[in-house]
Image: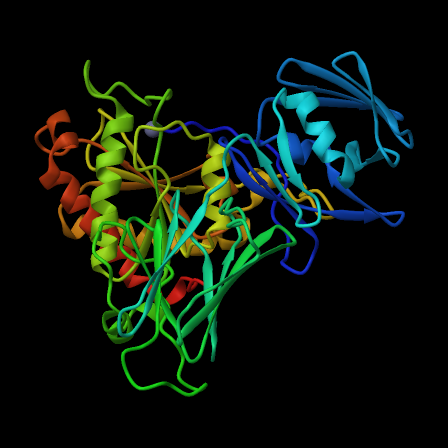
Length: 464
Ligand SMILES: [Zn+2]
């Protein structure tokens, strides 16, 4: 079952601008940091919207805002605001631009607890803001094998961008709330892998591993472990690139060896497919039968689709792999921040037959100017490609005797996704509703979708 709604939110901006990363249990997102009168500011609505329910109203010089049950009032050009009936003093004046409030960046550590009622850890210099206990810890284990291996263990799955230099391997964590391992630099008593150093800048955390020679990385343990090792061969020159596998299969529990990674033909050209099992947690979706919730069908279907896509050489990010509640904004933000090549949302219905493949219908409205653009039109630039993906899915499903129809609708999070995006709603086959829980039926549908994605692979963007 699909819900057609939309909302405005900030979108991420280009990498060379100042950015703030915000990490919380409900959302992980980035905001542009704007310079005004020589000081840094962030948009107040953009900061609060992913965290809760926000409404605001601007009259002349006054911005009134409600976040959940907290009322606040801000005055253009004034340093004093009212929050929960109490004064709050900023270091620099609040600005109101296009009916949107900008608040001084250096006040966020004090400001957010007033709204949220919880403490935050604001790392102002690094432009990283942690709300609640969300930090991912890192631990190191050096194995003096030949070649030596450095295992990095994380307390939650991570998704860094990995690059190599002749004697260094660099991991940049753009959306993982990775926190400092304690000291900024750790030296190893090893001739090959010598040091790991941690730094934070402009919303990113970075972990560099230094070595005498080339290094490569592989993931294991559902992306909670990164094993760094030197290639088995003789020491390599600077021209020999180390293999990188940023998105390994998540089902593997064994450590991939260096030679496997090196020989992998697909590692360098992997496209990330974002698979989104709709609904989940508190939101059960449609009641397909008295005892069958849509959220359970979409999760099982999504896992099968992940398997089919991984078998075809794609990296897959399942937006939920359990019965968890995710908002449409969280789904879109996670998909967008992961730089996926294609986004596939999965729904299920008890009526009709076969499948219905949706693409977004962008509402006709003027995109707002400046750094904020219409969140609900984020899909617009890639919509033609989304339709290509949709057409390919229809063709592959028809080959497998599914009745398929296409439609477009103003859907969240489809409208908010910046990559080619489709939503597939699985309906019963010849056996009625029992097909929806049939592994065989789901498998045929998943294989069709995966084959379709393969057929358009050349047009999808490779993970940077
Ligand atoms: Zn649904």
